[in-house]
Figure 1: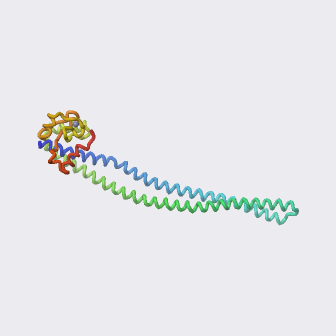
Figure 2 (figure 1 turned 45 degrees about the horizontal axis):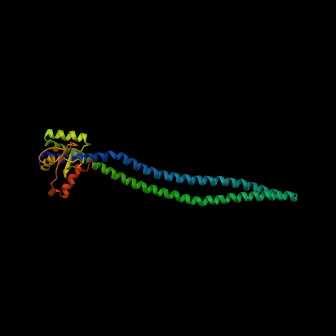
Figure 3 (figure 1 turned 45 degrees about the vertical axis):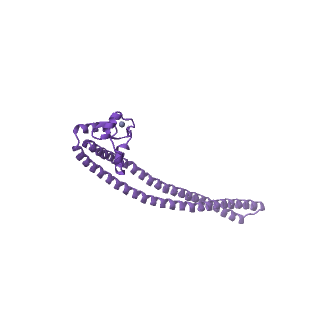
Length: 254
Ligand SMILES: [Zn+2]
């Protein structure tokens, strides 16, 4: 194989790997935000559960105050009942007493209902608290994993940059200029495999004469359509390892 072409294939592999790593690094703040959001949601669930419980308790206190008022009136009527002179007065007081008792009973039923509901709401708060703690641990773990991944990606970018520099030093400057120009215009992918007479990235058919030259891998040939530098993988050499290499350029968009 043409030495420049061989290096260009390796160079493309490095550039694609660097590009992927840089993209992952760039996505990190977005992933951080998603983790913050998960924590915030769990925090909000706890706050909402506590608020509902507090509202239940404050309703209960209000109703208890009402009960106290009616009980006050009830005692007053009972005292008055002792001092009534006429039958008519007695019945009137009895009516007031019955009314106050009904009011108290209604409110005591409401209080009971609120107390039963408060047990459920207390359980809700506990559940939300537990879910929050679980989420905190999970997010903490994800943060550590993300941080480790970032370190790994950043060191990969540095490693690739050094490899690239060494590789570029061995490439003929004119050939390198073609690579750089095409890479700039084609979203960083300047090398494409030619297979079955077709450029595997832009999918346009290569002229038979050009394809025949490409098959020899001894010249720098460009796709007429996308201008990418073409290389050919002989069928016999299409082992899994080589297939992996091909995907370097082949996986990118047209
Ligand atoms: Zn093409």
